[in-house]
Image (cartoon, rainbow, N blue to C red; front, side, top):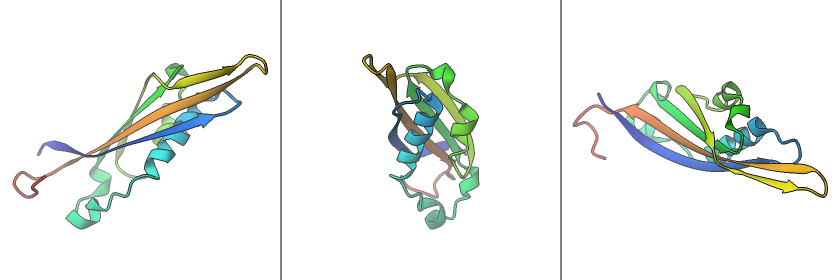
Length: 119
């Protein structure tokens, strides 16, 4: 059965003073999760643990993301985290601080039996 994307949710998160890219990424994922409710699993009788979730995080320093910590934010399914250059660093040169802004996109895919559901 083919995988179908059933949700794409976006969020943003930041770390104001610590220049912690993982903290900003986690907050972006939590922001995205707070915008969605996946009632379709219960409604359609689908197994939510069978869903495949892909998280894409955009930050200025993607190599500083702890992908395992970000993945733990998703309570169901199998999760893959990709980190890419994106987001925004806002420098305060006067106070020598950097505010990190992360962007997150969460895509959830499930197998839908052919002909059973019309989407």
